[in-house]
Image (cartoon, rainbow, N blue to C red; front, side, top):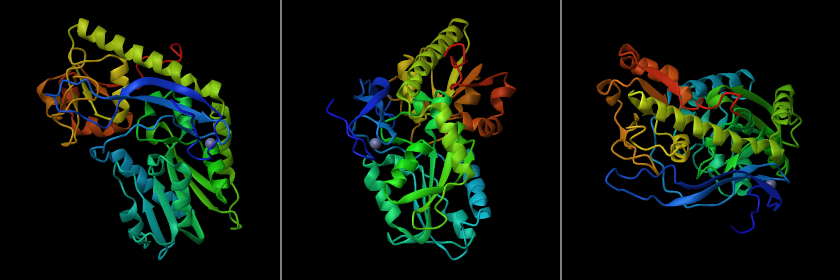
Amino acid sequence: MGKIACRACCGQTGHLVLDLGEQPACDFFPPCDDPGPDPEYPLQMWLCSSCGLAQLAADATVPEEPRGAEPAALVAQAADAVQRVAAAGLLSAGARVAEYGSPHGGSWLGLLADRGLAPVYDGGAADVVLDCFGLMHAADQSAALAERLARVAPGGVLLLQYHSLETIVRCGQWNSLRHGHYAYYSTSALTAMLTAQGFSPHTAWHFELYGGTVLLAARRDADWRARPDAAVHALLASDARAGVLDPALVLGLQVSARAHVKGLHDWLAAERLAGRTILGYGAASRAVALLRRAEADRSLLPAVADASAAKQGLRMPGTNIPVVHPAQLAARRPDSVLLFLADLLPEVRTAFPEVEAAGGRWVDAETLGRCPVDA
Ligand SMILES: [Zn+2]
């Protein structure tokens, strides 16, 4: 690998904090009759010593991701967020809003239009520039942030939503690392990135989504309101407690990965030995590295059900495990359904009551091997 330069500050000093080896592109689902092997690329997280941004070390070519169904948890969080931002007085009727969305889908524009905000589609200035899980998809973080900030009208605000590195480190969510997601923001690193471009965070909101998601509001330094409030200071303090800028502590993700992968493999093997039927649910990107590293194949996990028609009939990258229609949850009467997206639990329990009616149970794939003793 060549010399790494930070995607935000161009700094060349930093540390590899998580190395998952060679991994298939987590969004490339091959057809079941394609036996592979699938192309694999290095998957590593690098922590910049200068600005503190955790980022993808290498730049693999990543194919387009099939757009999944938007989980109800995301829809509910968007409504909650818009309500809280509006309560803070940041969403005035008549204000212009520009949205940078995630390629995975989901838009707040409908909710904002309901409050009288007018969308700007032509690349022009807006009073509210919203980025909801979009910025992390940019390989050049500095340029992508500059583009968004340039569109903030005088007196306007940038709203940035991200799954926080503090959550990832504190909860050992090592499998959040994936190709195509170039940056993993702590509030601390994002503050440094904003400061370098003449902006400052001024308030923030915290959500339970993905274990801990932050929506940060930033303003130009020239704006008298551009001063971090107590909510921002609390997030910075949480960052410090989790050690998001300390490579030795972020490196704990490597330990989490080992324990988690072993926990999953051992559980699947024990269930097979006991003659129990297991199915997976949620062909999510975070399941890919997990299944691959756990050396799971269809003898251990016969199928993963997913509501996205675009993924059904394909197989999980790097394994021979097929993705099937959720109707299989009723047809196969599994003893356990391994859920790869914990946020979906209330939704799937309601949508597929047949699982529990037949005596099956939902098992959170994120917690296997994750008890503190293992770490
Ligand atoms: Zn940097």
